Image (cartoon, rainbow, N blue to C red; front, top):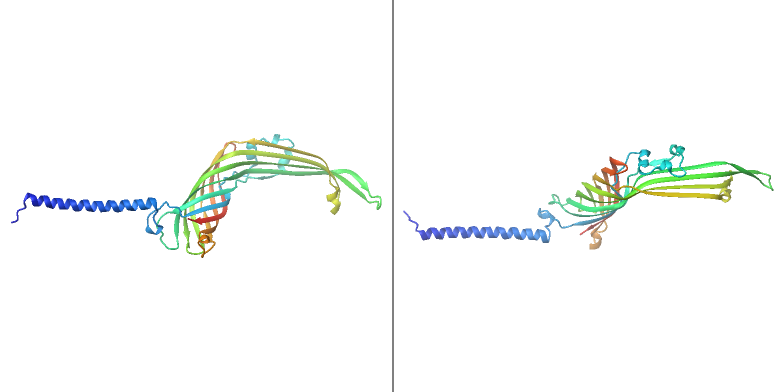
Length: 317
């Protein structure tokens, strides 16, 4: 029977603790170096780790997020008292053109980074973040009218032919509710066939914006002139302007906001495969159906659907 002395037991425990310390130190150093590399350099997308290192910049122009109100002229009257504007008559409202537009135009700037490990060599998944800004027209109405009545007659001294002279009154007015918008958006997209010259992507995203510089503009013009009735090709030489009236009015409106859920889908076409400069550039075309929650002090809050189109450049970083 072997008897262990106190010294043997102490040495054995010392060796065990030493091995544990060394093992823990190796694990700590490995983890620390991996974290430092991920923070400072970014992890390769194929390594299976997430990374915040940007891989592309998107610069796009076209339609930006914008809500739409129902096609009701009464909505426009909440922005401006149009019935009491100079020159506007009650009968005008039965013959005018009215549009609830809602679409804006502007620019969006976005940057993307890989989301997770690429499952297939030809596919990739990215997060995109950015902002957009532009101008939006919420509503528009226009009226055009021309009243013609007999004014005088002319008799040709050579042929004896008689020409009727008409007096014309042309009335035109239009009104529009406009604003500017600036907002943020984030999207998660999957890019497919990335090894080919043309790659496709599909995703889902959300955006939010504030509506500023809201204004309603009204313009009215009235012209009086005479012309020869049925003068044919000579008609343009027989216009004689007698009087012109022009009036404009601008009213500041309250600021609003919008929030949108959209599904971006597009195609990116590489501009070159040989030179390094062109290999990083892509022509980008995108369409995004959306559902938008829009709110303004005058129009209230409404939910609408839309379809936005943008195009521009994707620059690989």
